[in-house]
Image (cartoon, rainbow, N blue to C red; front, side, top):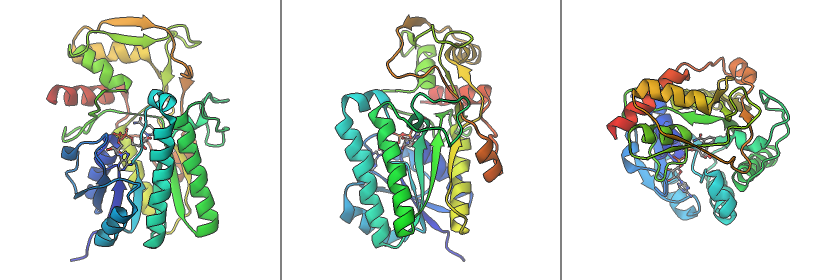
Amino acid sequence: MMRKPTILVTGGAGYIGSHTCKALSESGFYPVSYDNLSRGNEQACKWGPLEIGSLDDGPRLAQVINQYKPVAVIHFAAYAYVGESVLRPDLYYNNNVVGTLSLLEAMKEADINKIVFSSTCATYGIPAASPIPETCDQKPINPYGRSKLTIEQILSDYEHALGLKPTCLRYFNAAGADPDLEIGETHDPEPHVIPRLLLTAAGQQSVFKIFGDDYLTPDGTCIRDYVHVCDIADVHVIALKRLLDGENPVTLNVGTGHGISVNELIENARRISDRSINIQYAPRRDGDPAILIADTSLIRETFDWSPRCSDLDTIISTAWKWQQKT
Ligand SMILES: NC(=O)c1ccc[n+]([C@@H]2O[C@H](COP(=O)([O-])OP(=O)(O)OC[C@H]3O[C@@H](n4cnc5c(N)ncnc54)[C@H](O)[C@@H]3O)[C@@H](O)[C@H]2O)c1
């Protein structure tokens, strides 16, 4: 029997990483998660082994790579909270940037040159265009976004000088949960808007704060592009297959091209959960752009992909069911 190609998934115990491991396994790959569990969950690794280790631990990385002989790497492992990055830039540059350099060194030693990297719309900062095309200037406004942009630039330099094949995926807002409810989003504390909203619906949080209702948007609240985590997972499988087929690396937005306001989220969450949700208006947070929507023409054309479960009802209902289950 032919062996399934092994993929090293850094951050495989995290939210997007675990959903991607499921999609990889369903597509005939063998995902090996490499995660230090600083923000992830051991129970989320159901589709392949979990090897506990940190990005900055070169010998451990080398040992895992030597044991499993992956043909490519999908690199999710990072710290990803904007507010925390403003207070602790040291953590972000060390973990995200220095950690990635360590990973690249281990890949170079092992002759692995294919990597799919988790970038973010936070690299655009306050964008000059809406929807945002990949060619938009990247001027991040916080250390998290700057750490991710720095990694994109490092990957590009390694591509030109050292033959690395990096595909960078700039996700917008990941949301929702596995429809089979085998995994979902579990962070503690929970930084993302939809799980926070649903925690309030479930009565585990007394009030949901809306940060700013005076933006220049139709209802005054911020607009974001929410993309279902399973759609993001599918994009990784496509990106990986293309790299393995020898296609050129690409940098693409991953979103839906549609914006949803915070008020629309609340309305939908109330309807789907059939619960009341207490809201409270709070001042705007520093550095929150009014609108972030992806221009998705490039990914739709290049990957022949379109989201299959990113409609708001599916996002909220899968997240709600996961919330109820946990
Ligand atoms: N969630 C989003 O909406 C979103 C949007 C854009 C980009 N991203 C990016 O996608 C990636 C995954 O995001 P997520 O929401 O799944 O985050 P997550 O925190 O759930 O997952 C990250 C995982 O990486 C692990 N990790 C962190 N530092 C590590 C290290 N030094 N060594 C080993 N493991 C380490 C954590 O334990 C965790 O399991 C991140 O790189 C994030 O920046 C996420």
